[in-house]
Length: 88
Image 1 (cartoon, rainbow, N blue to C red):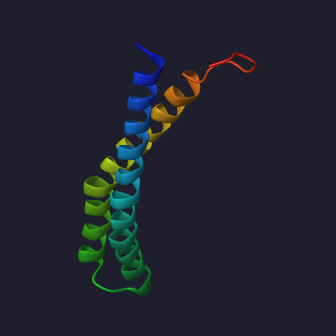
Image 2: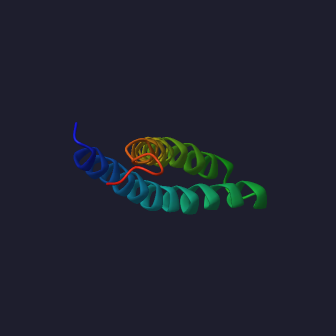
């Protein structure tokens, strides 16, 4: 592929992965954190445990996938950079 096309797709991977991490990760942090606080305070253990497990599955998996997209996009972005000293 052309370097410009590679950089475009790498930038798209970075943007999509970053959005997934930002949106899914913040939601997972909120709901999982509220479940953990409920467990530590001693509220309904069944509901708090269900919140933590659901947040880990429903939010944790997309967050991990977004993080993988972000890392692969960053790696591809750096790999398509011209070597130092080469004129573009």
